[in-house]
Image (cartoon, rainbow, N blue to C red; front, top):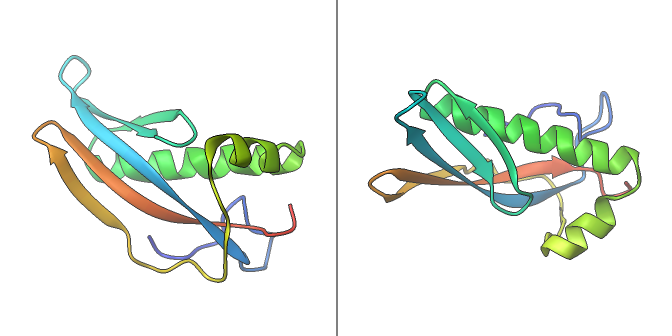
Length: 116
């Protein structure tokens, strides 16, 4: 995933830390779409193909974390879910793998503010 300004990073500034989350996606035969979810935060999305499903779940996860920051709940939710913030710039090394014939997994590093 390329580093870009997200709702979690202050406008005009780079994030100062990141979280690593796991996304899973599978093809839904009934809707002919890929359904994706963030394992750690129980967020779901979908897309017409695997790339779009992973892009949309990343965007939904960023928006959710941004909302947690705005309402002052990020620290509590991260503690409950075992999510830790790593200081520094996120590495640019997304990893997508097929875990079963019908399911794909992706690890993503998403930028966050350290001072939220």
